Each structure stands twice: as C-alpha cells, then as structure tokens.
Image (cartoon, rainbow over all chains, first blue to last red; front, top):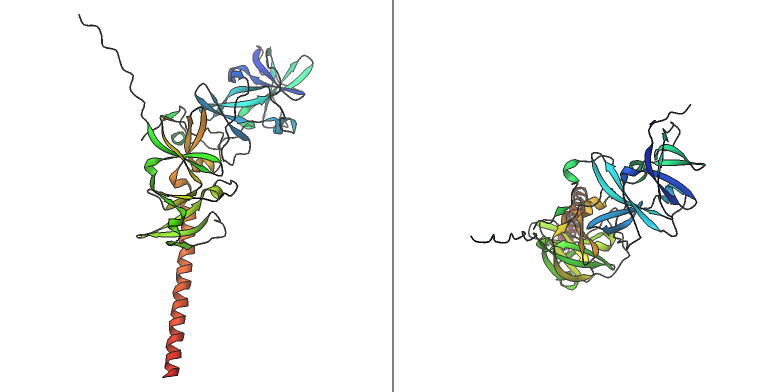
Length: 159
Length: 185
C-alpha cells in the first residue's frame, strides 16, 4: 500500500541526467544557469567538483550523476542551483544537468523503507515514475553543524 | 536652506593578502600572518632533519629561540604534484614555516566568504574561506591549519626522541674516549 503525501498538487522541477529524469521540489530551486567556469582548488570532498561564481556568491558544484545514474556526466547543459539545508541553515549548491528542466505540478507518493536515503518521494508523470530527490542526503555536508562555525551570510574580511 | 549633503557609503574594510603559488595553484594568506619571507637557500644552514612516518609533509625543523618551527611542504600538505619550492613563509603565531613555489602578488580583499558547507573534510581546517578576486576564486589559507595540535605533538615527540638518541650517542662516545685515554696512560 502506498501513501499519498499531499492531496493537493505540489510544484516540482524535473531535471535530466543522461536518459533519466529526477525531481526536486520547486521551492528549493533558485535558478537554472548556463555552465560557467569552475574554479578548482585542493580539497578532500570528492563529491564537490569546485565552485562557480554566481551573483557574487561562491557556489559549490556537486555532480550527483555518479550516485543517481552510476556514471559522471561527460557533458552538461545547465547548472540547476538549488537550496541545500544544513540543519537550520541553507546554502546554494549547483547541480550539473544534461538537458532542459521542466516545472510540473504533481502529487508525491512517500518513500518506502527500502528506498535509498536520497529518495524523498515518487512522482508519476507522463508515464514515468520519477524519484524526488532529498538533496540533504545526496550532496555532501558535515554531519553536525555548529552554528557558530558556519555563518549563513558571507563574511566581510576583517583585518 | 542648505541642501542635504550626500551620504557617503562606508568604504568596505579590506585586508592585505599575499597571493602565492604552489604547484601552479594560487592561494592567499593574510599578510599579517606572514612574519618573514625567506629564500629556501637562506634556511639551509639553520635546519635540522626531522621525520615522522605519518607526516611526510614535514622533513625539517628550524630552532627559533625557545621554539621549534616545522617546515611544511605546501604541495604535499594540499596533495598537489611536487614542485621545487623557492621560498619559505614563516607564519606568525604558529610553529609553521611553509615551503612555497613563489609569490604571485600582494593585493587586498574586501570580502571573505565562509567555505561552503558542502566542503566537509580537512579543507575546513585548511582554509579560512574563499575570496573572489578579478573574477577568480582564491582559497584563503588558515595559518594554523597546516599542522594540527596532534601533529605538532607527534613532531615534538619525534624531535625529543632524536635529541635523546643524540645525547646517548654523545655520552657513549665520551665514555669511549675516556676509556681509550685511560688505556693509553
């Protein structure tokens, strides 16, 4: 038996990774932008490729294709910039996608116990069953957030 | 009636930084954190070798007054390909000297953005944050992020062991010399 999470329709953005489509709740999406230069520097978080500059913010690029479709993306058409929650804080992350994105309204079915942690629900759309992504489980982040060490707003340099 | 004087926006606070190169990668460090910049050749007489199997990035130590300052190879610290270092930064209020390839330039930054939380490993210790300069993003290093207290403890212990071994060796040599001279008398 499946449970319907909401009787009302919710808005989702469908994104494409290779041949597959996935969904993210629309209220988590900031914008869809053309690929821009990725700045890389040494770090040990393998899921993060680098960062891009967007509207004065420095946004990490997380290629989630390896986890979702089993291989990294060879080409990318857009970055879907989404809000990722870290406890009570949110930050932007850029997800490379391979095709156009689409805004739809649909009902979401809650995940079952056997679904992967990155699945926050399921949609049925145009004959496809589509995973709704839980970005907090899909993209990296510290397991415990100390509010004092992780400011939400960009800091001004202090001499 | 006098017209209102225009309101001046406060000038953004800025911080002087040094951009430096390690294996082709550009980093920034606050110039206030750099006590000395020296050529690598000027260190050669003052350094002593030190080694610990888990800390390959540190091969030398310099005595400065009461303190031992450990020389960290920045390329090895960041996991970058090795490159011949040319300069050493002695970092203020730390026990670290940093081997780097060269200085790119001195400039100032007006904004330091905290490292995004998606970065969740050692880089959170390495960097104070990121800054955007000339449409590029540069990581700003944390001077005390090159050697953790645990690593300093290991290096101090290693240095202490080597000093003890040296003292024993000298004592044995002196004893041998004394024995030899008593035989000759």
